[in-house]
Image (cartoon, rainbow, N blue to C red; front, side, top):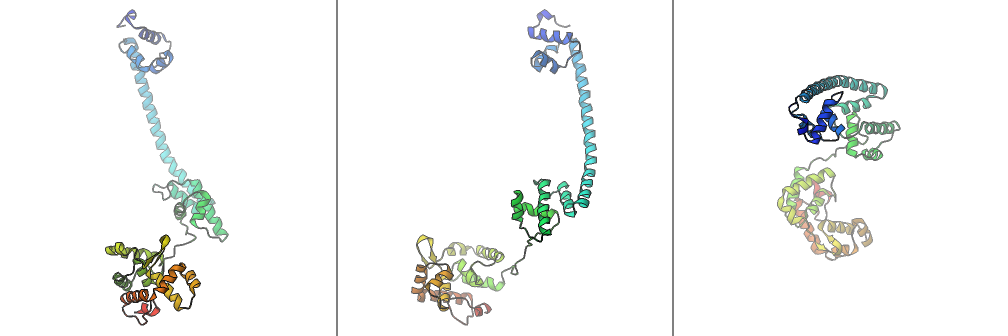
Length: 320
């Protein structure tokens, strides 16, 4: 040995005695655990002791060989798994198609695929969606996506993706609106309406003769006004008269009130039909001469050729 034992510290002497006298040479970690000291203390203690150093180097070689063996074994197992897993998936898909049906096989195929449309949804929930869908279809019942989603705590959009991955049609198919665009004539009418005292909502009501307009058209009409930049800020809140609690009289409401009056409806019936309040209806009637004149003038500008100059839009106006 390169150093005498009496020149060693008690801790190093304890370590060397244990390492040299052990019947089966321990590893450094085993020695550290047995002697209740740190691994680094054991390593430093034997660093200059040639006899133990040789054994330590041997252990390193053995451990390296074991590590390489484990790595090779792990690589072999992974290769075997990568070869077997696709076979298991194919068997599962074929079995599902034979025993459960094609929709279940399609869902499995999507679930096992690399580009899944239904990430984050367990296979158990996917099969439950199919069970609810197919059982309802068998009974002749139609379920909305949100109704299926409520059963299994999923969003309707997630349910829709699962049904789509099974290549099944939705029970409530999307029905495209017959009117998918604003005609050129209607665009011209809205453009002319921007030079009237009407707000954007008033113009939309008079041009399309509707309070809400179809959903698809509503978006297109809004986009039209957004493109007309000055229309938004200057015409967003144009009204004839403001009342308490945020109520107000606008030109489209006034037009409805005058049309009700022309049809012979009394005050109570007019309030009910227009969903307004009595004080608003009374104000519109008391100031009819002034308001009616403004509405007729605005409609004359929107609809260039009007046969009947009334404060509401008629069928003949739309043909002009």
